[in-house]
Structure formats: C-alpha cells, structure tokens
Image 1 (cartoon, helix red, strand yellow):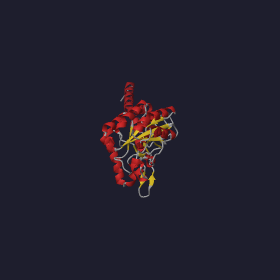
Image 2 (tube, rainbow, N blue to C red; image 1 turned 30 degrees about the vertical axis):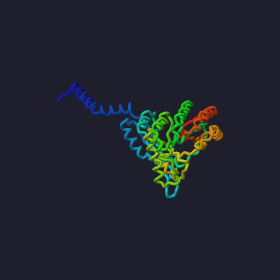
Image 3 (tube, rainbow, N blue to C red; image 1 turned 60 degrees about the horizontal axis):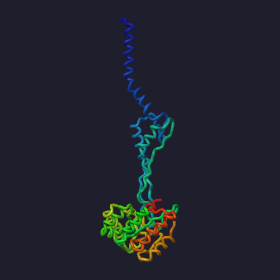
Length: 322
C-alpha cells in the first residue's frame, strides 16, 4: 500500500483537529481562569485560591464562614447571685464582599475574610441607672414626665418648636390612652417618647412580675397611641431598685433619672425653675420638668440661656448613645 504525501497531510490535519477538539475545553477553562479568576499566588486566610472563579469562591468562603461565626448574645442579670453577665459581640462573614476582595486582589497577596460586627441589643450599659450623660460635649437633654397637665403641653411644644429643640417626653401609659391626640402631637413634632410606666406607682414596692407589667403596659399603650416604641424608662416618682433596672434592661430599656430636678410639680415661681436649671447646668445634664404653668413660663427663658451658653439640646437616647 502506497501512502501519498497528500494522505499523510490529511491524516495529520485530522489528528490535529481531533486534538484541538479534545483540548479546547481545557484551553477555554484555563483562559477563563486567567481572565476572570483569582490572580496567581493569592491566599485567603492562608489557603491558596489562585485561579478560582467567582462561583467557586462563594463555596470556599461560605465554608470558612461557619468557623468564623460568633453568635451575639445580650447581657443578662443572674437573679440568684445578683451579678451581671456581660454581652457577647457577634461576628459574621460578609461573603459577597470577601469574594469581591479576592477577585480584586493583586497577585501573591494575602486576603483576610471581610467580617461584620453584630452588636447585641442589650448591653451591660442597660443595667445601670443614668443620672447624667457623657460630659465630653456641651449637650443636654430636656425631659418632661407626663401623667397630667394636658392644658400646658401645646404651649410647651410651641416653645420647643420656636427654639428648634427636641426633647424626650416620658408618658405614662394611662395618660397616653386618655389623651392619644396630645401624645401623637408630641411624637409628630419630632420628640422622643419615653416610658414612664403604665401607671404612676412606686416600683420599689412591687414584685418582679408587677414591675414587668408596669413597664410593658406603658410600652403597649404608648406604642398604640404614638406609633413610637420607647427606648428609655423613667421610673414613676424616681422610685426604683437594682431589680427595677435589671427588669427594665431585660425588656430593652435604659433606666433614666435626672441630674437637675426643677421640682416644678410643686408649682414654684418660674424664676425658681430657671435658677435651678442654670445652677445645675453642665455637659451631659439631664433636666427634669413637668407640664405646669410655671414651667411653661420658664421654658423660653431656659432655652435662650442654653443657646447663649452654647449648649445643644438632644434627646435622652441621643445623649446616652455616646
């Protein structure tokens, strides 16, 4: 049998075509990895990931994420020992941003997992009463405890609006239920709503279940009237124990007292209220008032003095968040 040169060329061409067909997927994959995969020598937490494509990286990162996950847990009160168990700050891996970081990483670089801190909603800070906020800046919070005094509230709101000031109004649940329109007016004006209990009572004389009911009933009625869920709890009459604070904390509240008590519920002269505020003025001060006629007369003067002295009025939650 004579094999011609042409036959050899045809056979060679056929073999070459067959080889190309067989090698094409591998060549294509190599090209894809070179163009779109992780660059050579890149590691993730010490693990080599060069050449991996985006879909493959998601699987790798998801696998690592499990071992780096830390569940956040709230601070809690040990009722047997009377001791605080601190909160645990959680951590999760941001898979999408980790993958993006790997794909953008230069050759031979070491990439770390992108993690996100998960803060617990209840911290050790919830388990102490607040008499004052941070003193690093000239900021104060005006607080109005409300269980009566409906007739003075519109005027107080007007004075605050004219001064462009927001305050924190601690409402009892029974008052919010009785005067929902006024409660909504306070909330709609941009003020913070706090919880002053479902009714006015001395928490120190209550059992645990009744204290929980006092706070929870206040929250429910306030939320129904205003649409705002309170974050701060002002014990009625300023009466509380450490148990009160702990129970409030477990419900998500910080317990707030005051730095300056105007004692305006005794209806002193407006000048007396002004003097009490100005004599106790300072960074982080919590100023307690009530809706009374003397307070209504004193408030514009107090606001003028605060502005003139460079103090910024913020809500209680804003003040305590520093």
